[in-house]
Amino acid sequence: MTRDEIKNAVLDIIQDVAGLDEAPGVDGALPLREQLDLDSMDFLDIVMELRKRHKIEVPEADYGKLATLDSTVDYIEAVRK
Image (tube, rainbow, N blue to C red; front, side, top):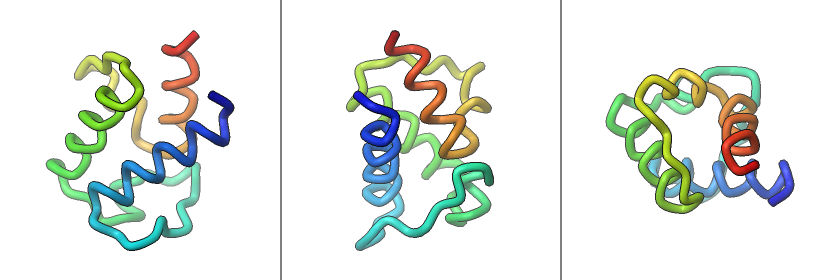
């Protein structure tokens, strides 16, 4: 997957979890939870969907690496190599 494909896949997950009709404009450098008003359960649902859809393991210690859209894309790129 390219970086853009990963980004779009993550935005699709966010859209599904947050129950949005369309993906909002997300600033890749800002924390997702603050931008989208996600609570802890929403964030965990996003992590679980990342695990399921991308077949990757995300240890709890790495959750902080998924704070922004850019850092999430970086994380997925790194673990898929």
